[in-house]
Length: 259
Ligand code: HEC
Ligand code: HEC
Image (cartoon, rainbow, N blue to C red; front, side, top):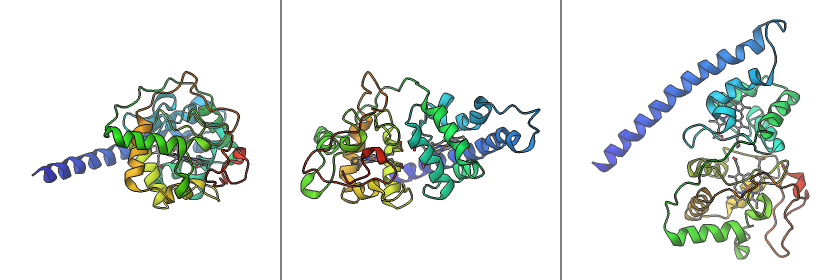
């Protein structure tokens, strides 16, 4: 009975989501149409016009959609956003509507959109209440801050910064993101559905982590408040001698060498 109700609830949620997709796709297509069809004299190519379709899904000023599904893009480092737009366009990430939207756009255009959203300093939502038992939270905190050197799992802070607010310009922060979003992204990475430029350090990091450890990590991350300065730091974290090391093709600021 419980399982049946649960299944019906999920089916209804999926139907709602598909309905919302269609509506948004139509709205987005309508908003993008001017880019393609109207004469330059009629259509003003302002950043507000360019990014209107984006905000239909990603929320006002890119502050995130109402659930964990449409990610925040405001204030994420510019290089990271640019890399994601290219990843959708070039097939390293898969979400049909995003790909359709960025497919015809040039690198210059994508970089300008990325710079725009990166420059927006929008307040972050309050952290989510922790929903996992205290020992799991504790395990999550240790994995994030220290990793597990014996199993060659690097600490998340060794690349995402001591305060987990990211490293400018290519490494995103890990706070202020809903648990559902974190779980879906890390799950996609493990399944090979999300990739970054080679060598893909995130794929490498996740290879060593078990399901329950990932749940502990995302449960802990989603329950943390942002620090007073939520912006990505400019200096890459100092590499801890002896720590597990992995190289990132998408983030040369980390040194371009294994860390
Ligand atoms: C129809 C809804 C929709 C529209 C319109 C849309 N996006 Fe997205 N976007 C998504 C979804 C859903 C994801 C997450 C997909 C996934 O799980 O990988 C996403 C992911 C992204 C990401 C990666 C975020 C991250 O933190 O990794 C960026 C950047 C992005 N979108 C930018 C844009 C920009 C810029 C526009 C406008 C040109 C836009 N999006 C329009 C739905 C949309
Ligand atoms: C060796 C460096 C490195 C380590 C260690 C690392 N990351 Fe990452 N992570 C990155 C880079 C670089 C990116 C951006 C990849 C891209 O361009 O798509 C990233 C992206 C992410 C994203 C995507 C964020 C978003 O907005 O979609 C998540 C989530 C993430 N990492 C979680 C973690 C967690 C959790 C850990 C610790 C278990 C971790 N990372 C450890 C380098 C690292």
